[in-house]
Image (cartoon, rainbow, N blue to C red; front, side, top):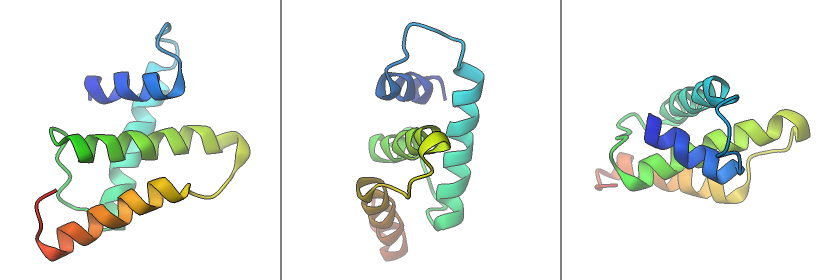
Length: 92
């Protein structure tokens, strides 16, 4: 989870502080849970694509807290592809 936290902080541009670490970790956990609830039940934190999906989803959760905008197309596309790959039995 530490690697995902670093990736998320890089995405959000807040690498120089640890003030948000606990909150961002919660966003990562929420993203992991939400993605599993969407249907990607075999997420692997060691898989680069799964890790990136979790980080993208968590970044969206963090950013939307103020804007309350819908999920960006890029995140929805990656999520749908991950779910479909799992349902088809393909390796992610």
